[in-house]
Length: 426
Ligand SMILES: CC(C)(COP(=O)(O)OP(=O)(O)OC[C@H]1O[C@@H](n2cnc3c(N)ncnc32)[C@H](O)[C@@H]1OP(=O)(O)O)[C@@H](O)C(=O)NCCC(=O)NCCS
Image (cartoon, rainbow, N blue to C red; front, side):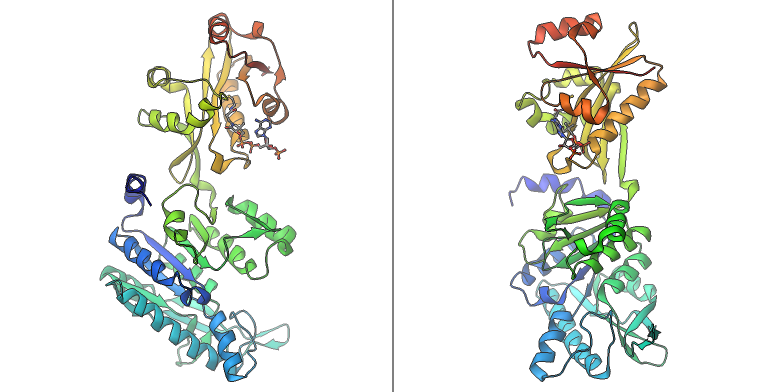
């Protein structure tokens, strides 16, 4: 990490200050070499006034403990049947893991506490099968969590729940993380796993709208690795419960957590709820963002170079597409009132968000605006994306004669010889 990266982090601080992140850590990560770094990163988040709650799983440890003791675990992740022997394994494994996490946090001078906050009841008999000691989260003691957080204490929550009679149940840690995130109105739920993120048919999903993920799960759940389907399901559940962003990251990577939290294009998967996507008019402070966003495309001659002054002069024509308040794409609509034409210009989608329909949404947005203004025709000039405008935007190839006279003059002068694309709006 470079010192200058600190400037990039600065933009996130106001949005994250005093907000809650839930870190759902798979048991396998606690024994990984990178665990100490992960705990250091938790300390860094706390130092930025981000309230971090840790929830952990225990399946990897239950598995190895079962092997050591030569008993058969009836279930590993708290989703199936938990018999008495497996509950005993879960208690030993979970307590040991909670302890190791507490050790890791105190090594970084963080105050932390084992939080007994999950009130559970037995899952009961499902399709004729008694799930015995497998529990379902009934309630989260949010008051206790809030008071710990208010005192600067990091709560550590194991995958265990208690009922009113003091009986213990094994609960699924993804479900615990979701319930805690919902109760605390967390702004992020981060699943820290041993995988790179959500992998669908062998390909990592870098980011996806929750609706799209829900559709994939419904139509083709088999496309996800078996150990990741629970993360995918809980990610959609969390977004539906009002958590705006869910991340799935690889906890064995040095920069896995900070890279994901403090950048627009982390290494893992981001699942986000709709309201985080937004097209808005550009403001003065966006001029630099537009220049930074489009710099690469300008260098590759995909876009015309625009000076600060040029953008500022027609700033009212520019729109920004943002995700989580970060500009990831831009577009402009220049209007030629005399000819009743509009020009869609400066369309750019950052490479980290390509091929997710953002470009199409911006074309549609500009087209709607042009129709609202009663324009008869929308034009676009492109050197390398003309087939895109044709196949995805419904434009047809025109000629420079289609351009309004002032634009024609600039066109001839630039020597770029872009193709002219036209869409009739009548
Ligand atoms: C062209 C651009 C705006 C596309 O944005 P995007 O959000 O990635 O595109 P979408 O997700 O809406 O569409 C993706 C589809 O377009 C295709 N596509 C992307 N760039 C393309 C190009 N230059 N030419 C032809 N097709 C292209 C993709 O292959 C994909 O096809 P598929 O859906 O059949 O698989 C983006 O790549 C970009 O910013 N390019 C550089 C700047 C530029 O050329 N701007 C246009 C001049 S105004």
